[in-house]
Image 1: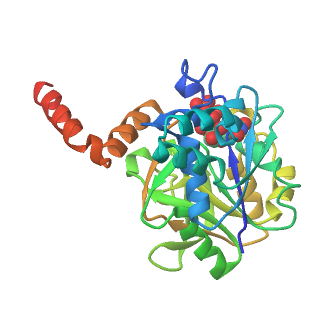
Image 2: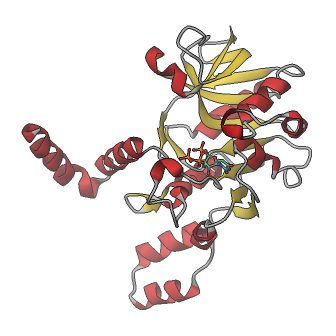
Length: 288
Ligand code: UTP
C-alpha cells in the first residue's frame, strides 16, 4: 500500500527567472490554480492522503496556500459566493500536508533524502512539484498499480523524439508488457548514440525505503548536485527497477515554453474560455 507522497518543491527555478526570484515556480498559476495544487490533487486522486512537501527559502507561499485563511473565508461568506467558498475550503482540506525545509539546494536526490524520517520503512510516491500530467487515470495511480504487482521501485517514463533524448534521463531494459519494462540502464542526458531508448524519466516515481541508503552512497554528480538518477543506478545493483510508460501528457512548467503551452491547453478545456480563446488563437495565427 502506498500511503505517502513526497513533493520536492525547494528548487531555485533558475530557468524561470525573474518570475522565480521571490516566488516559487510551483506557485505559478495555470489559469487560476497554482501548479503545485494540480500535483497535490493528482496524489489525492491516487488515494494518497499524507503528503510531505520539501520546501526551502522563499517558499512560504506554498504553506500559506494550503493553510486556512479565516479572514478570506469570512469575506467570501459575507459576499455569499458559495462556489468560491467551496473551492477555497477544498484547498485547505485536500490532504494532510507536512513540510520540511531543504537546508541547501543540493539537488533532487538530496531533497528526497529529507523524507527519510517521514517515510520510515515504507514505500512512497514522489511527484515533482513543477510537473503536471494530464491523464484520465492519475499517473500516480497508474504507478501504484505497477508497484502492487512487483513491490519494487517504479519510474514513470514518456516517449520523447529521438533527437531530443540528450535533454532527459533515459531508461533502457527488457520489456515486461506493452507499457512496463524491467530496467537495466538509467542514463542522464545521453547522446543520441548512447541512448538505449527514447523513454524519458517523467517526474513521477514510486520509491522503496532502500533509496535512502542509495542516496547516502551517492556522490555529487551533474551540476555538482546529488542526482536521484545516480542513486537509482546504485539501487539497481541490489533490486529490480521497473518503468511504466505513462498514459497522459506531461508538462514541465519550469520551462517557459511548456508553461505557455500548458496555460493555453488547460484554458481551452474550460467552457468559459474555449470559444473566445479559440477565436483569438485563430485570429492571431492567421496573422503570423
Ligand atoms: P529542477 O530540476 O527543475 O530544478 O527540479 P530547479 O532548481 O527547481 O529548476 P532550474 O533548473 O533551476 O530552473 C525539479 C523539482 O525538484 C525540486 C524543484 O523544486 C522541482 O520541483 N528540487 C530541485 C528540490 O526540491 N531541491 C533541489 O535541490 C532541486
